[in-house]
Length: 184
View: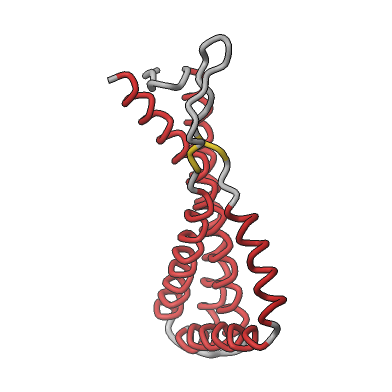
């Protein structure tokens, strides 16, 4: 097995095993998200390909939007101190990004301060987006429910996937890069 600077052989094995599991989960989650689209497309008033295309593109767009947020929250923060313990072992330079906690607190304060007036606008915008996707999927019975489900499902999956990948892979990449830079 190739040795990655800054990581022991066991760390590389764990890292690769985690990536394989993540890839499998990604495939399963994608199939799980596309299944209701295909089932709905079989009963939709439009042709099958049009409904699947609109549903898949809406899902992909929602996944990217959620993924951008997940990436933002998953980026590790540098510690700033390059300390070593008494044995000369360097401490990790990165710590968990607490933006999610900070944003959660911030949003709670904003929502209480602003009140429910803006929530109606957000709900209207979400309802409009769902209705546009539903119309694109043929607007048949259940189109609104399927469209809303697609958007919520893929936004959530995008967020969680990007957060996890960023949190694990990017932190490792930063550590390896820093170790290489320190050795050269």
